Structures are given as C-alpha cells and as structure tokens.
Image (cartoon, rainbow, N blue to C red; front, side, top):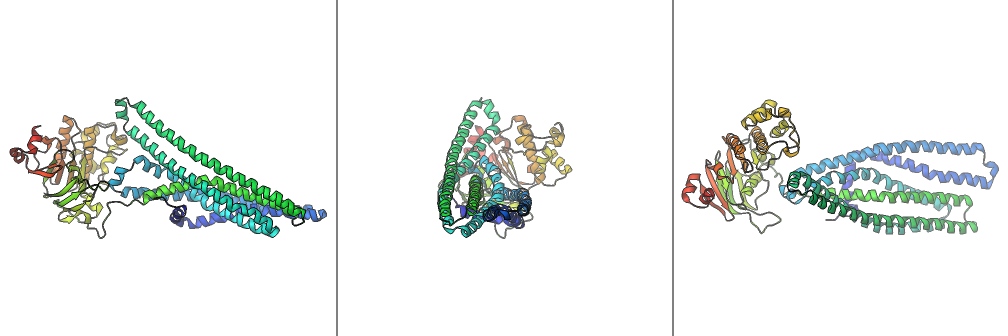
Length: 579
C-alpha cells in the first residue's frame, strides 16, 4: 500500500532518536552557517546607507570594523560547515547501518512463503542500494529544510522592516511556486519507485544467470542471457528518461519563478524608489536578500532529487518491514529439554495461502513412534515434502495438528523445536567459506575435535584431508569446488554435529551416482541410529529396511506397512518397486 510522505517521515523519525544530541548540534551549526549569509546584506546596506547619507562618515576604521565582523562570522561558518559535513554524514551512515541491521534481522524472521514469492535480487536491492540514499537523506533532510525555513522566515521579517508591500509581492510568488513544484515532485517520486523496482529486477536477472552459469554454458545460452539482460537494462534506461524529463521540467519551472521574483524586485523596487518609499541602499539589500532566498530555493530544488531518492528508499524499506511472518513464536512458548521423538499428525489439512482452494493434504492421520524409521513414497504432488515441512513449522497446518511427544508444535519455542530436528536435503546448500565453517554451522562454537569426529561419522574425513588445505579448504560459492557426494557428506556431518533426536531425509541420495549414493547411504544409516527418522525417497531400494513405509498419493495415505508387507499386498507400492 502506497504511503504518504508525511506518514513515511513520521515512521522514519524514531531512527534519529539515538542520535538526538548529534542532530541538535548539527542543526545549531546549520543555524550558524545561515547567520553568515543573512548578516551580509545588512552589512552591505549599512555601508551603502552611510555613504549615501554622508560620504565623510565612511572611514577606513568603519570599513575595517565591518570587515572584521564578517571575517569572524566566516570563521564560525567554516567551522560549522566542517562539523555538518563530517559528523553529520557519520550520523546519516549510522542510521543507514541501524536500518540495514533491522531489515536483515526482519528478513531472517520471515516465513518460507515470503521467499517463495519474492526475488532475492529485489531483497538485495532493498538491503544495499535503497539504503545508500538514506545516508544522504538522513543527514541533509533536517539540515536543508531547517536552513530554508530559517532563511525564509528571517528574510521575510527583515524585508518587512524595509518595505512591506514589496515584500508581500515577492513572497506571494513563493506559495504558487511550491504548489507547482509539488506536482512535479509527486511525478518524480513515482519514477524513482519504478527505477528502484527495476534495479531489483536487473539484480535478480543477473543473480539468476550467474548462479545458473553451468546450465547457461552447457546449453550455449549466453546470447539468450545477454538479450534478456539487455531488455531489462533498456527498460531501466526508459524509466530514467522519464525521470529526467520530469526533473528537467521541475528545474525549468523553478528557474522561471526565479525570473518572476527578480522582475518583481526590479519593477516594484524601481517604482517605490521613484516615489521615495525605498532608498537605493534598501533596494540593494533587497536584491541581495532575494538572491539569498533564490539560492536557498535552488538548493532545495537540487535536494529534491536526493529527497525523493531517500523517500523511495524509506518506502521500500518499510514495505519489507511491514511484512508479518506467517510463522511466529507463540506467547508462553514451551521449551522441552528433551524430546523422545513421537510424531502425530491428527486430521491435518494444508493448503498454501495464495491458493487456499487447492488442498495439498486433506484430513491426514499419521503416527510415528520414537526411534522409528518411516519412509514416505509415492508420485509427485502427494504431499511428502509438505509433511516434512510441517514438523519444524516451516509452514503451519490449515487445520488439525502436528504433535511431538504429545505437544502441538505450534506451542513449542521455534528455536527449541528446530534445534531438535536435523534436515538433510537433496539440494545441499554450502555457504561460501571453508569446509570447517560449513560443518561447524551445525553447532556454533564447536571445537575442531567435534567437527573432525562429525566428519568421520559422515564418511567425509578422508576426502577432506585430500583437499589442498584440509578442513580450511575454501569450498567456493554454493560449494562449486566439491562433487555432489562430497557436498552431501558435509551436510550429513553438519547434522551429526547438531545431534538432533528427529531426522528428516528429503531425497538425500536421489541426485547422486551409484558409488556416491552407496557411501552417503552408509553415512545416513549411521546418522539414523537411535533417532526418529522420516525419509522421502524415490529410489525405493534405499528404504527397504524402514520400520514403516507410507504410500502417499493425491488422495492421501493409500498404504502403510513394511517393505515385505506392501510387496505381498501387491498394491501401489509393489507396482512402484517393480518399475
């Protein structure tokens, strides 16, 4: 939902709170720099008036006093400007850092459903480039508007003491200028939002292409990827063209109003001076104040682009921060110290929120005893992976309940629940880092001895020692330097180190060659000892020894039993096995 500028600013203001003292000092310095500009026309007017009234009174001593006064003001101005440029920018950078930290923490808490619908490139743009502009915005926005307000208020007051009618004529142009500029501002805001979205799209396309570079090259798809990138890049250019068109019109309009104000001073000032209602010195001061006022307006105009970029970044920031996780820790969450591993699905139904009419599971009942090895088999679309996702609460049931040791998983503390469950997936994800770091991810703070022991149990120790730097070998992004079997053994070592009582194996060997599958299968058998194990398998030879095999189709559970019992029954499982 689109948010107004006022609402966004109201929501952004609390981020200044930790830096209130710095902000106050920054605005004080802004006031001091403004003082220097405001005093100059008065000094010039004073010298000119003295010269017009009695040239003999314009002595060297008087001129030096005025010059020294202005010199002192300039020293104050330079010092204040240094603080604003240095400490003020650091304040903006700190606010940006705080926001980036808060955004990343919030994204980490969001549910699987959010990531299924959101491109990673879009999130990357919001975490990085969107917040770059917030630094400049956080620093300059309070400064620029404070300085502009101060100059306009003081200039108006001083000019009214000189000639009220002329002042009213000049300042009557300002609100008209503000209304016209506001319309262009709105159009610029829209184009900046489109620009930011397109940045995310380009990021997402680049990420997709680079992560899939092996597929691209194996299918000689380089030219297709280049063409796809060029379309996105060209769209980005078109959005920028639209943005600069509005910006050009905005700048031209403000310059036209500049001319109107100067014309008003020349015509009005000339007529008032002709009738003796204003002195030449006063008219000179008028011109200087109008020049200062227009310089202020031009500065605000130039800041407008930065302002809109900042507002767009803040808006996109709050769009993510306003996302509510589907899965949240319950109040008064249960934290069982020990879990034996009994799992019960009671009248469970499940459908994705974006497609509530399509039931993935419907009134499913399933009992898994502690220490039991249960295999889920059947054609795709039967809900095997969904069952496994409901246990650690990656998703919540639509109706019914999933219980562990008689406790509804929705009442268990999330960290406690997921800390008791180990997952080995077909698509192994290794982080960019060393072998040691990837295994140790299973237990933060693990010792070297614990990591080595886990690797030995997973059958990974020998191949690790054969790598160039052993456990300190860099695995590359997503583990590209390792084979599929090697990556899988590292993921198993990670779970060994975690040592959970519940184990979920999601087609853990289906993507491996026969030799790797044999090695990994042995590792999985060692890992499964003494644990409750739930296995999703397409290779039925790997689950012959399961305590219970559950056959799932789109109609739910069709068969249950041991390998021998199901073969003897001659049903769906027997047909799948014989195939």
